[in-house]
Length: 590
Image (cartoon, rainbow, N blue to C red):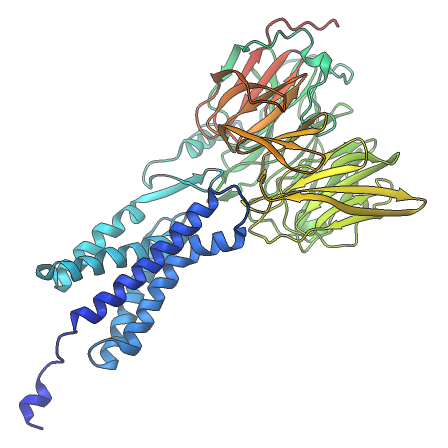
């Protein structure tokens, strides 16, 4: 071999080979993403949610890695150069991911980098004149720029991304900082004493029985027409909490600066009465910052759980602390991915807590007066977001827990497990909804992601022997984190649209309307539906047809919070605004 031959550069890569490989990789990556995206919008439930998630999250990056492996093993040029090229590009990818905003890094890695590689490679393959390193770098930088300049501000119920420029503070961050100096507010003057608990009130998450049903007296006389706005307050501290209501006051939770605050407002005016902050600030990409749970009012006190894992007991009149408990310190639990979301359940002299962690007990009971531990279940819990639920089954009072291992019934006096229904779900399929307890021992539970579906369980007691058996299951209704109500033998709930389900066999009667991941209240024979975009609609609760009676714009922006009705007034909030509406015709006297 001549000296000139030894010194000559490698021949240029054969365009046809790497073009074909790149096109194949691009088709595979795009096809996998498209399959998963379409599957996520298919309500038939025929495609497992794990397959959908794997396709969307891993399809593009696996296609890119496959192309890189092909290039190393079968590409053109010397092997050492091929390896060096892949290592160099890999280092660039690592730097790119680090430069992206922290909330965008996972998405930049799994979607942004593969998309950039496909755009750059196809441009080089299709347009010979741009085949140079400077041009390739410019194309890649242009394709990457959206992933580098954006910040994730959360996702929708369908996991559609909400983004904004990274240098512009988010609306929720601005609201939290604006209220930072008011994390704790002490009343400056006397306030009215709390009146005795009444059916007119709304004592905690989803009402007195956690079933989303408004007591007849609380809405008595309402003529069914659209409510009239009474007051509006903006900003409020970010949170996905709902309200509790007692007498002349309403209570909610807010992120104020670096504190999670329980806040009391006057129900008739929206004026702030007091606030009590606890250090902590949970944040995650999909759902943002702030508390998730809802305060519970009982016996002149307010019980609340922060997203960071502190249980607070406060005097309802002025917010003075009675006791606090750290779940991490007392029970050794680790914070779940989306923060502690389970609202305290108060029954008698006990406060029931779902620690929501594999490292802690499934359920604990605290003394309502002192916060001391009365009992804790030996069985470990799972990462879950459903709240302890009161139930009476076969004449026996129970506390239900729905988590990633299934549904469990416990004796409220001792914590003893009475029965269980096994339903294991993955961590990325969180159990969030409340059990829907029917009068004959049937309980309906729903999964957290598309395709997980809904199941009906029958709980029976024969002497001292309890059993829980499956009655039916369906994959055509997945409530995600949107709770359900029932009217007669029909269930109503949200799965992007409003769904009517037959309780006898789980068959779907209809699916109508566009409400996204909103929430539902049952008021007499009507459903009050809050859409994910903050609209308030009234739908007739009848199985023979879908009939939307009226719809109004209530609040702007993503609204995952549950509405409440107390003393003839509807209260609604989202991450930054809250509003009160009067129900036309309401009267306190039956």
